[in-house]
Length: 224
Image 1: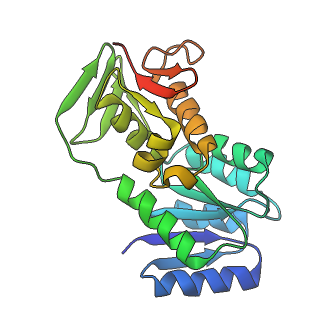
Image 2: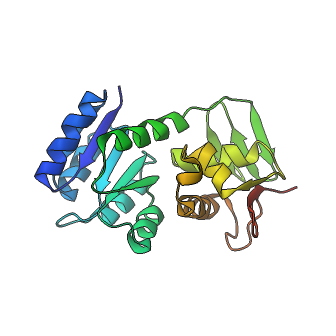
Image 3: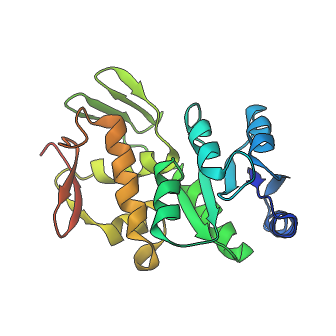
């Protein structure tokens, strides 16, 4: 059973989501602000964060950034608005996914299970591409011998692209395979995921060697 840390300042929303997610089989701990969330996260034993962005004190964006400094735990952000600023800023801060409030517990449960499922893949050995080494059994990634810490979503994206070098994946295909969201998903998830992945594995993210853009179609893995 996964332990979900819910950080939400609205008491009614917090209590309602906590009860609903428990009914869906999750172990849920809930706190009301960013300070308490960071303190609870620091004690360990958290498999997933569900994080409201508009928190008093330390807001959700900052909580996300601080956690990403030391951990790759999956993070879903809750936003009251679906505008580009909130969504993109949340994803750039390191979130794996987002949902817009008010959110149905069944939808949030499905997103949580999808992200947790992504952490599991079928191993096929070691993939080596120039300085990039991907061990699909230990899920360790190194660049020129340097270990790279990837979030589960970033790792799933890299595994998906690198299993077929040269193949072009559309954003819709990547949403389906990496985010389990298919054609109803938001392509901004893909673009921000690629941006974060490039920042970690590419020598020059502006001139990517491994994750290449195919204009008008999507992305492919190189070198080819």
